[in-house]
Length: 181
Image (cartoon, rainbow, N blue to C red; front, side):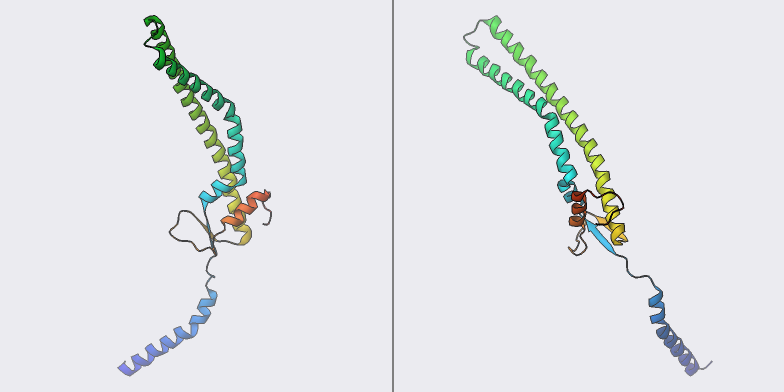
């Protein structure tokens, strides 16, 4: 084959590819619809989470008040010991010091127990609500025809693809599964 024949063949192949390019492009699926959701904002602002925090605060308010009263009692005893220990009889001062130490240990145990109980309950509530939030994001994405939802943190997401506000609104409305936003 001569070089001019090869050149014509190559030119013909290029022309064929260029002619078929629009047909090939039409056959390709359209670019997927992508959205972004700020999970921290959802967890901080979802009405279910705000309600849960208020419920936990109310649930632990009595124990917190009792803890503060015990701490105030301890502070009062410590103040009395610091002020009067030098003028008290030695056995009375030692008894007061033992009472202070005992109350201090009891307060520390109570504080640790209260903190552990609160953390356990808060984690359980967060996990329960997280599942609701996740389900709501998926429902919204499907209803709006999204192909991919990218969660935070990301380096950059345009406000054009940020669906966080729409998901928060859906959570506020408390729409049941399968409903349109």
